[in-house]
Image 1: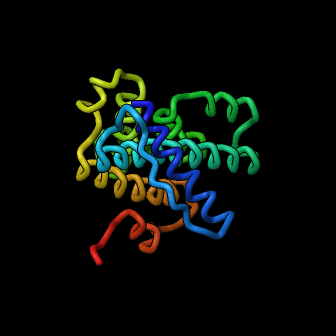
Image 2: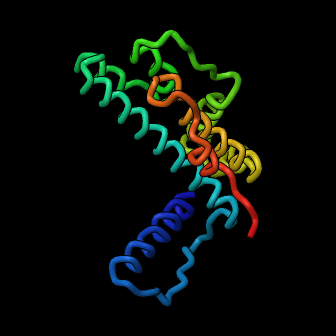
Length: 176
């Protein structure tokens, strides 16, 4: 399992090297001991990065509420220490909005799913990972709904009056 994360980290480090040195690398390293399959590695990477993006987005919005003096430093600090899923669904209340988000329907269900999938994949042993890792179609659907949920949260928080179709397109893919 750790080899799969190491492989993903090395791929990103390779891109950093290529960009910073304005070159292409010639090595094609494969970890000893094996990894998940190629598709599964990228599903895992998508899952982990979506969760990092969710966490970062929440903390950014909490910081904005603090800067706008809509919440106190103590409330902001307490909110940041909460589990990611709870913070997401608490944001409208922190912002003083009466709208609630549903973890059981609509695009925000994907936030709950992504958080649960992350926990199931990160906190279990390797033999359980393959049972908990979503198939590609499910991961892509969660990614699309995640983008929709981010944009819907902007509407709920009053940052936009409606979802931006340009942003929503980020969650979909087309064949060339």
